[in-house]
Image (cartoon, rainbow, N blue to C red; front, side, top):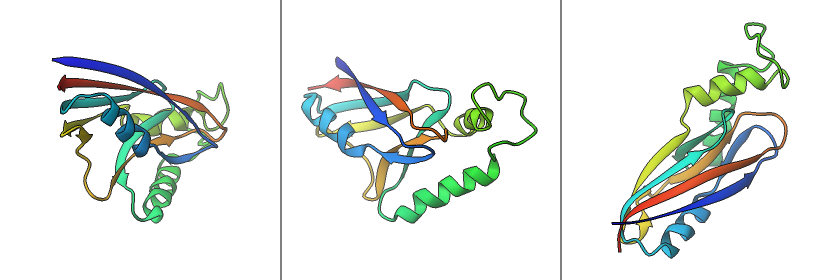
Amino acid sequence: MHQTTHTLSIHTHGKGLYPFTEQVVEWVRNADIQTGLLTLYVRHTSASLLIQENYDPDVQSDLARFFARLVPDGDPLFEHTMEGPDDMPAHVRAALTQTSISIPVLQGIPTLGTWQGVYLFEHRLEPQRRQVVLHLIGEH
């Protein structure tokens, strides 16, 4: 059994979904592991990870609008506003989604479906630099 790790840095420009499938696939291909399990983990409490449709960009904008309506910025319900009106809503959005995802690797590539892509879901209004840790374990 072999394993390897890598950290991706993703720069965001505010709320929304940021695709990074190509970086993940490229790294896995170069890792020389043919069969295994890839785990991705975002190291932040106000961003999350999604596997979502990558064909129609309306899907990403619809998801962003849905979460904005579900947990609006500046909601008076929240006391935690240390970093602004989007602070606590960003934490709630992250809690409703996921901070880690696992993808099987077969024949040296992640087994994503035809229309699936990997996204960082940024929940803050201001630009951020996010770190996503990749861990791959498996056999050559």
